[in-house]
Picture (cartoon, rainbow, N blue to C red):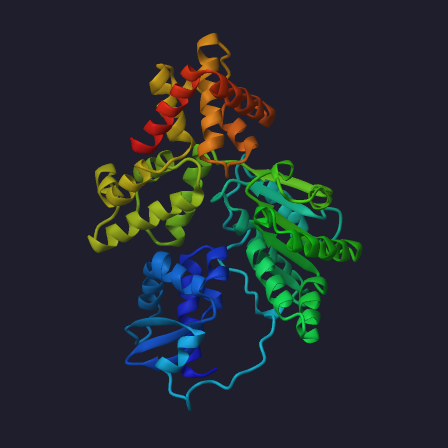
Length: 451
């Protein structure tokens, strides 16, 4: 490995800790170091989306990784392939090699995503147990394994934990993790180069000569007919050969609209496990473990405050803890008071207050009708709660269509997804027929976006 590759490898080790696994896979794994000029590392990618995505949303993480890697460089420059000659002289340009689909050996599971550091509570214990069973005996009775839950609840952590455990016990097994988006990109590349028989063969072998295949975020296969067709055949080949298939989604199988029934029926043919938002106690346990891992000096009072502030997304909760820890290190003091934490989270809190989520929609609906949050999300079925509850359910399906109906039902006191469907369809018809109902819905929607 030459000097440039060593530098980039060290930086990547830090990036893997700072960003999520899909983020690492989609963006940073697609960068290639090509030169070191004026103390800046030149990185190249073929995809403008990778360059733009990192520059727009991930530059802070990249710069932090550079600082933490202790490499003697001032920064990086990300270029596209056709810009290479402007940065590197012709004699330095690497010789062009025939392109190929990346080998499965290049997948490295994140080391900090293990079963040992996955905090288990009532909200995820079934999924965790199923995942561990699969890791211990892949390709046996729990096949396929389908895990679903809202973003930020640990699905990717579980997939990487399975990968790490399998490779620890069976180092010779061919285990591959990818996202639905990357699966589609691989297929598109293969189709675009259909005149190259070798590339077509490599694509087939990459996905069918496996012992374990994991595909994250399968909901993104919606409306991608060719990808669904390809996955159908890959699924059949692996399943027939008794190879393990693991899938994750942000919604239940029955809510994977625009994915063919022949695929979803296969998704549901094995074990289906859900992950729900964690309880307060589980959130506290997660934060305690993260604080220990990141060496953040924080008091129980502060842990409890953060756990209460973010109830539905573990990833956001962890981000708040890191922000508090970074702020504490800058001020050379522990995070030991609510006032200090509020100051540390001032900017992010102002952004979060404008963020539209289920909490905000329900709170504004409650204010509009003069009812209590606990009542509208509870078991009461009194007449004065029917309209605001149904309207809140309807508005969530309209404003936040990415949230699974089952998750919305759980939010409203553990109700079934069919209750949400009934509320959505009833309000949709009522708004079409009744000007007063339409005005109420528009009033609340405006408050949601403008408050």
